[in-house]
Length: 222
Ligand SMILES: [Zn+2]
Picture 1 (cartoon, helix red, strand yellow):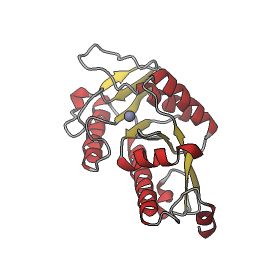
Picture 2 (cartoon, rainbow, N blue to C red):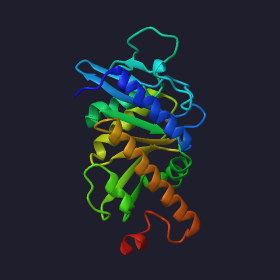
Picture 3 (cartoon, rainbow, N blue to C red):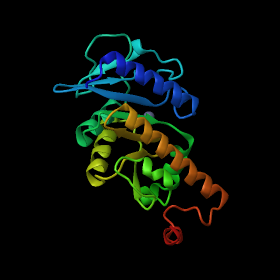
């Protein structure tokens, strides 16, 4: 059953408060969207510069496939709306969530040279859609950050084509993008990936010699 705009807007508000409380979208960072209709594409999305702790359903906007807002209003849609649209079109996602957590920021820099982070051996991997075992190998690609949204959207598009099995990607020194068939599944993916990134980051901090995710020694043990 299709959700109404009001139901989706309420869910986006709830997610904003929950993620803010976890420290994943501080200082107006992060943005969230969900598909209202696919033909023509209409996306409910958080506005630019919104405090996620104080988000209200009235602030949620609607954009088309060019990231243009449908109705005139005082605020602007998130600057990263084009990235959401790429994920929706290329992955068939029903919802896209983007966080700016400490661990995604730190690890996306530490592993930038490798082009991504391999995550394996963790029970929490089973929270990713279609994953049934901790032995799953998740590759979380990293794209370079840019303030030019067209450039960033092109990079993201390439990454999505290159890694069709990835459940998310990192923007370097910026944050995490993940998605799902609906908002509930996308929220679960944020919780799972943020948990895994924090677990890896802490592991590296405590035991730097063992904590490298791309370390072949770690591969042998798992
Ligand atoms: Zn961002």
